[in-house]
Image 1 (cartoon, helix red, strand yellow):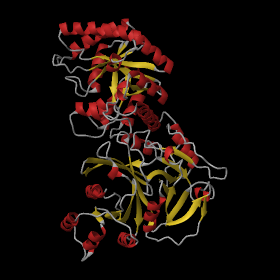
Image 2 (cartoon, helix red, strand yellow):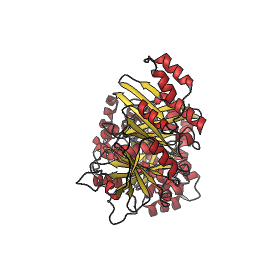
Image 3 (cartoon, one colour):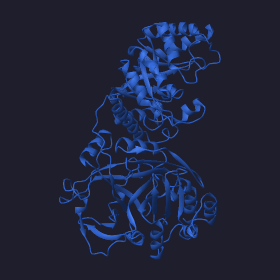
Image 4 (cartoon, one colour):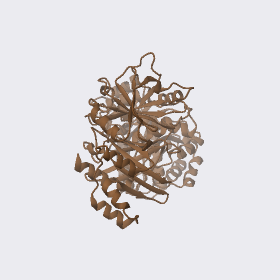
Length: 608
């Protein structure tokens, strides 16, 4: 199906928005009137610009509060509509959106509304224009799609149809039965379909709509279920995004448009109208890669944690450190830092050690790469010698390179074969594997990152969590595979310019966190000090064996318990923009110690 996007969904001038939409692969646009009014281009020049970019103008939104108003007010409305229809003729747009009235002058009179909409349709027909009547969720008298359709059906005018908007419908009701009536509308009378998702919030619907919409798959609405109902009517118009979002309107238009287009590709796959390569969800974390100009502090930290430097890349200044199944690459190459996209995507400039790449064990790396390309995440170019293993890598929205790889599987290229072993003492056995990797996101790409990891990589998105930081709220949402062998908490800091304490971190799973913490401190390592008040509170909340709480206090170990199990964890000091966490899970505990996050964040602010 054709895809379209409303210009209000993107930031910048109208010219910038049109260019971004075209480059992302959209077929058309809805032009929001404010964008046209602020543009120095004439309607004819805008029309030509769209044609040059291969875009159609699918909808224009110039008029409000048209129907069910006193006669003298309606006469003024018709005069205004005539002027806008003449403009649309110059613009080359053939469908106008008319929202249900919110005017205090509007009467609760369907017959009056139908009569006036009929007159409006007569006028529109003279200009070759169709009128798409939409029920606003906060409409004064018409606020549901079925009410709007009843009025359109009563008019019976060929130039009058309805517009269905997923936000206005789903914000009023999440009951699937309330959507079944959509299929009673003839497809040819659905003149337009606007799509938006949103987080599930308990707030005024107008404020919810104006500030918190997001692209399909990023919120809590069943947008796919609604679209399935619409498609069963025979609707063959575009799938169009109309998203009001404060963050999107401050972000760079190009990446936002790509994110928007990706959301529609995934949506089309979900509703069964587009075939994409099947997801090949990762089955583990093969390695985490750190880039640094000074390897000594990183090497000391890794050695203290029990890692051994086991191998060196045959052609690049990259060392492999291993412990159990946990692997960390340390890259000191001068070409490594410029390849990071953190700067260009609005992230904090790289300063010292940073985590720039992950190796994800893939059951089918080639298939995973094909899916990524289909979903607008092209495979990254890679400097590779002839003898190096052919590894595909894609860029996540935050710039992290994600290598799709295999470790010691005979049927697939083995990235480990690129490394030559070096003499080393056996590694300690405290850490079993990488439990999770927390990736701090640029503040304006958090929702995009969740959709990317879910749609491109085939991971499942967990519920969003907000935790208190001394300087605001930190938002986190984990994406995982089915068995928890891949866990990637995605976080965004409390403020756009302050994420020093929210550096990325690698959590190492251990069977005995107390032993691991002790060995680390005995090796000279420093664990994050936790205030005594925290342990006083633990004593009030839980019962511990004699001496147990004192041990946690001495080592800085935090503790959490839920209905499924127990979680122990502690943190190293930060090196550059990276720190490590030691974690122990008992029973079915699946979280990340969110209850302890405010204490950890405050402690990190105190020592930075």
